[in-house]
Length: 214
Ligand SMILES: C[S@@+](CC[C@H](N)C(=O)[O-])C[C@H]1O[C@@H](n2cnc3c(N)ncnc32)[C@H](O)[C@@H]1O
Image (cartoon, rainbow, N blue to C red; front, side):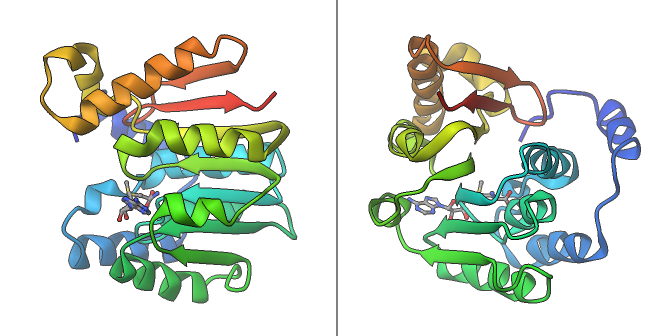
């Protein structure tokens, strides 16, 4: 992923952000050692951002689409309400196994559930209401995930969508052959069209859009 800010600025921001706890540092290392695309994990700055969002809205019911090895779920868990719960969706059993092993070592062992399978299928079995949702899986399904999750949110709940800038490639999406680039640009256009929704695209890491559920 192309960094949208210089490495020096990124490091400065990290140095001025709450440090990652030991368990998350270990998870990050294991993800780099055992997976082919470790850069998919949200990382310290975006992770702390997710945790902060969970904390300020005191999220009790959280839904995540795209667990990977569990980094973002654990960060949100650290910010959620005392009795909070997370349901996280992942189709790759190997990724889910790494995530589970780290969840089991955390204080949130019994409060994070991983549903292994295609997210679109898992979503059919869920009803909400959710306080917080994080969409971070296959980009070609972003519109479907968003449109399915929006009605499951409580009023005032927050949906966060990752990678909405896609290393800046969305700026020239019509010239791109890459399916994900075109899908993200189409998703961003879809959201722009939903003028009644209050939203902000935050230029953090690879871009995260926040949408407040009406
Ligand atoms: C960008 S990674 C998620 C990163 C994670 N949120 C984090 O910060 O560590 C995307 C994940 O979505 C999963 N995924 C892709 N397509 C999926 C689908 N159709 N259903 C469920 N999971 C899917 C991938 O296996 C991958 O683990």
